[in-house]
Length: 65
Image: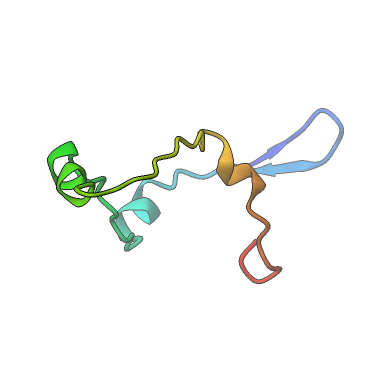
């Protein structure tokens, strides 16, 4: 559907429901704490990262953006 904006430009409106069902996404499940804890045996250094908005900092090349 095409809708006219107040400034005279047009806006394309669509319902991506069918498109979303057709997209094949890779799934990366988060590990459970038991899986992580077994890999920590003997570890000597630990860190904590706050990556809540980290995806805003990743620069994409032109073909990816």
